[in-house]
Image (cartoon, rainbow over all chains, first blue to last red; front, top):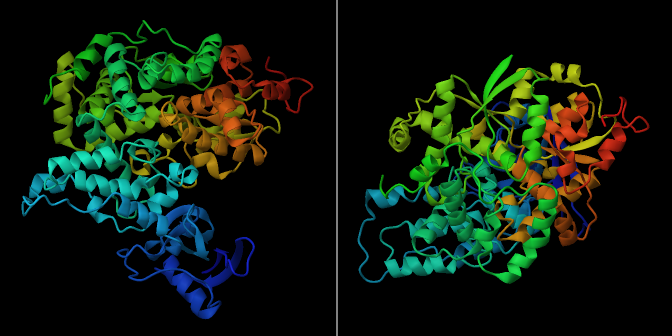
Amino acid sequence: MRLAFTITRYNPELDSAPHDETYRLDVSRGMTVLDALIRIKNEVDGRLTFRYSCRSAICGSCSMTINGGEKLACRTSVRKEWERHRRITVGPLRHLPVLKDLAVDMGSFWGKVRAVEPWLRDDGRMVAEAGAAGTAQFHNVDACIMCGACVAACTVHEVDKGFLGPAALAKAYRFVADAREPDQARTARLASLQGPTGMWDCTRCNFCVEVCPKDVQPMEAIIRLRRASIDAGYNQTGGARHVVGFRDLVARFGRLNEALMPLKVIGWSLRKFLHILPLGIRMLLKGKVPSPWHSTMDGPERVRALLTRRKGM
Amino acid sequence: MLTYALYPGCAAKGATPELFQSTMAVIGRLGITVTELTASSCCGAGVVGEADPDGALALSARTFAQAERLGLDIMTICGTCQGVMGGANRKLKSDPALLQRVNRLLQLEGQTYRGTIQVKHLLWIVVREVGLEKIKGETQVMLGDLKIAPFYGCYILRPSGDLGFDDPEHPDSLDQVIRAVGAEPVDYGGKIKCCGFPIILEKEDIALAMNGANLKEAKDAGADAMVTPCPLCHMSLDIYQERAGKKIGASLNLPVLHLPQMLGLAMGVPAKDLGLQRHLVPVDVILKTLSPGGRGKGEGAV
């Protein structure tokens, strides 16, 4: 079968903007997108630039955008992509600076991983083994190969390049969940991630979970990081207030009461209240503000019993 | 006749009552009858689970148990509810120990979930069970040459392992329904992205940048309107649209419809019966298209 590969090319020394080029190749059974790129480089255009090394989904260097989604070229079947999309488009990882063609500058990615200090703090009393219970808590984060797919797909990173992002936050969670990390260090680690660009910026869009080639489920790790924060008493950020306030309202009304939810998040801040007030008035005039006194379900007290059950039940 | 247990969720009974109203206005025409689960709670929306994972699963499980007693599968009308409850159902069905643990919590109100029901969004029921031919047959007022941008919302697409309906990279179900009502679906990258709603109260700048970019991309691609199967996306896209426009420095003014509102308009249901007057972004451009002098091929709906 002969297929067309549309590849985004960009050489900053020669091109004013990225452009697409199409190459036609005879495709053999079992061929990966990386195989195709290597053939194009060897047989058609030796200037085509991309990273690869292991060819076995271990090194994470051939992560790129294939048919609109972040994938490892070495484990993406040409035939399956064709069957799924009826086309093959290949571009660099999104929202990272392009160095040339399919190679992006991973500097900001590595900077964020370094920023979460991905190592155990040793207070001199470190136990030799984490123990079975501790390692299970790592929730597969150790499987991360740092390919950057999750960051490229992250919808918050798209609009806020400062966001630490799924890979770094998942890595941070891995150490928060490690039984060998001293309590004080764990608390300091959680504290350092409460501010802007930290764990509460995640919008839970699930893109990172979807694209991760190693099933790390970074968003699940971020959720665990948030839970650990609330449990450790970091409950005054807007994000933590949202989670706790939401749960409390569902415990009280059985369903979410949208009239009271904003007040739970903003607390007693007059400035924030004045910010949300105009929208609240417009919603009220349109009949979109539910009663702050009544539940819309039958028997909300049964939900209350469930969500306020004693711990450990 | 297709019979379902209707799970209304919070928004359709709260800040987007027009979703419930328009759903009830169209399902009879689609051949769907429902029994509303009036004692169902919030699904947790992924938020309760951040603090209390077992409690959140139990919220879904008690709803499943209610439908199971009726012998009916559940119909959702909210993309977020679909994602959360679909995921919960998959976990409970595939992990007997978890099901047992969650059932212990349901014992607080004497309920048990046996793991026998399915959870399906109205969109999926329309495409796979009602059928697009029926939609075409019921469509009296073709939506003319209106260009409608589908906005799927995260939870009805991802993680695809929990959902298994649309291709998460290349979804088509909502596009198919837009075609069936006579309109033209607008293709744009933002249709599978996030509306920012989950963080809009505490991180408004980020959420508005996300929301505004999607709306602008749809508008630049020629959209006259947008349609979504998720009321939380609707709140972000409609209620916050003016603020999103200011944030990104663009005039948006793009009406956003709930899925059953689009179906209702195409079927000739009067606009007021679909709650269109409750939107913050006026829907005039759509109603004008449907009027006798408009671009539409059919008669006016209002």
